[in-house]
Amino acid sequence: MAEVVAKLKESFDGMIVKKSSLQGVFSSLNLPAFIRDWFLKRYADKDGSVNVNFVLEKIKDVMPRKDEWNSYLDRLLNGERVKFLAKIIIDIDIKTEIITFALPDFGVSFKQTHIPKSVWDKHKKELLVTDGEFWGILDLEYKQIQNGKKQEGKISLVDFKDFRPYKVDLGFFKEARKNFEIDEWIDVLLGAIDYNANGFKDENQKITMLTRLLPFVEERLNLMELAPKGTGKSYIFSQISKKGWLVSGGVMTRAKMFYDMNKHQDGLVSFYDYVALDEISTIKFPDIDEMRGAMKGYLEAGTYNVGNKAGSGKAGVVLLGNIREEKMDVNNNMLEELPPLFEDSALIDRFHGFIKGWDVPRMNEDMKVNDWALNTEYFSEIMHALREDVIEKAIVDELVEVPKDADTRDTKAIKRIATAYVKLFFPHWTSVDDVNKEEFKKYCLDRAVEMRKIIKTQLGIMDSEYKKHPVQEFKIKGE
Image (cartoon, rainbow, N blue to C red; front, side, top):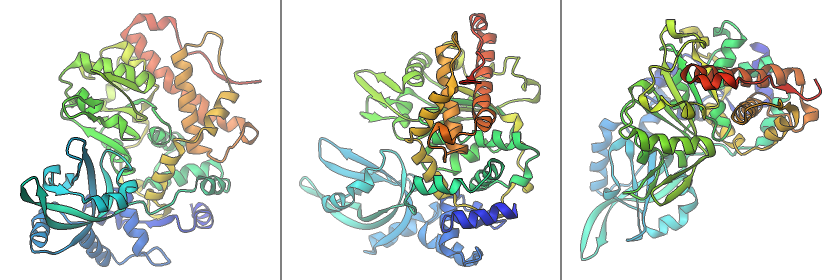
């Protein structure tokens, strides 16, 4: 690892942070990894060390806790201007032309707030970054706002700064990747998401863990994973990127997922890079038929129709569930504990691949990174930028020979997964001439085929018709 760290410092100067056991202190504050690394980077010395007490005080100054919100309200009511880092949601009322915001972490609703036109005009570009939740540095005051013939007290946004510490330069990132061998790069990626490469038994364990990142780098990549408890599924999908959404249990409706006809509001798939349904066996779907119909259309083409509303999204849908040891066999029915919504082979067929989560070790202290690593915030922005990169798809299309009798969905799924692997592992490949075909086959194509085969095997268990159309062997052209 010493050689990898040396290359990291040389290749990514300014984009790395020293992650250590101190992270446990910050995790107790329930900080997402991308926020934590921002603080570590900002207040670390040249050796990467931080004064923990100083940083904790800075966090308290910048990020109020939920139980401190009333004190902030008191300061606002006393005429004080307050500034802090938080999640915000914007709402535009077409009828009244009034623009408001909500602060989900503090229970502040749109009815309690106001954004003056001058502030909106100044920060419109930043505030329209997404229609969902996003992080920003808020400057607030309490003001009396004229509402018809009466005045109402509102929390007013008087200044705003989008939380984007890094300007992403994909060209720089791709060039830096050239300095690493593939085994080194795999270790770099693990460090970027807070894992110590030395804590894994073998390369397969490492790659299975990193496979969870494929929906972060490829648009509309739909995956399912079943894994034992304690293997870090929730952490990856909730803490690494601010551009994804994790749903843990509860109720999921078509309105929330796709489009709310009552509120005339788009759903989660329109706002995020992925929507991960965690603890899938505990999620309730009130109207199975309407959700199934919308889900099928979206998973197939990225579009949905709800009433008179036709919409689209770029989010991948990821199913995450726990699995008992006796069920860890791809040749047996592993999906029987999924909610009734998924008792439909045509719906399962629209998921591109399956992650064998039991190949990921249960979390232990040895797996926590304790050295220099890519800043998680920086890496999450890179992954988001890679989603729109089209070079990798062109490379895969040119490399892969599609079997004559290949099923169309199989072909689409395998190419999409292989493309995501190229973005993750080999972003420095800019044409087929750059490709190491042996590495492409081992790390991208073969794994994509395996992930699709598991889906097809499960489909065959659900419906014998699918046994007639097994996944063909995909090869590299000319080999």
